[in-house]
Image (cartoon, rainbow, N blue to C red; front, side, top):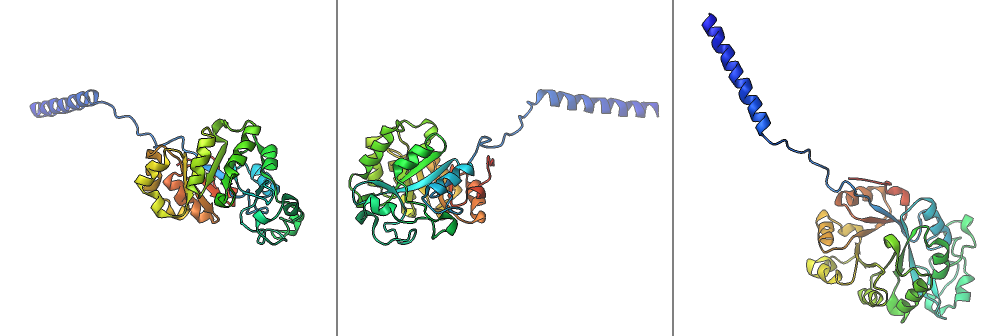
Length: 283
């Protein structure tokens, strides 16, 4: 019995010694870190916080600031007398109490229109702002994403916008707090030539614009490719990032549209409702 117990003891000792030797000779594996631990999506208020105030008005831009959006987006066109005005449609019919094409109305005529009542009576009297007013009121307080709307209708609009930015020494933005974008790629090439320090965004709802060949071409002058949210996949985001650009997706009007964009790790979400995007959201 004594011999049998001694045998068991020696066997157990050998097993423990072997296990200990194995543990100290095997490198300790570092705990895996979450990918992109610093990921934070930017919130861009579409035409200002346009879910809560009349689009492209100073009230909407102020609301975006109050809601702590990272940027607000605005649309720039030109009046008949060559002034830069902020409005989305090529006509004033939908958003104001007036009628007619923006380019056929003078600034004075545009300023007489009510751009708030159609949204809500509480905004009665809101005016169509000028780009200069928006820049003067909000520069340095919130990021501004400037969209050149239908620049093909307004020869020289790129030079005029560039002039307004340079006049205010905003052509060398810190932390990319000024971005200029358009659906018109040729216009953005031109703007990049005028002010190469300003980040450029390319808007698209066309899947054919998102091939790797196109993305490589875009990367020669653009910093952002900004597609419709319906086109966004994780693979597309990765491909845009591989080409050295970022992606801001538009336009979120439903809370359920947010999480898939976060899962894909877009850099920014353009939305009518800034509060739909979780602040400091990390994935």
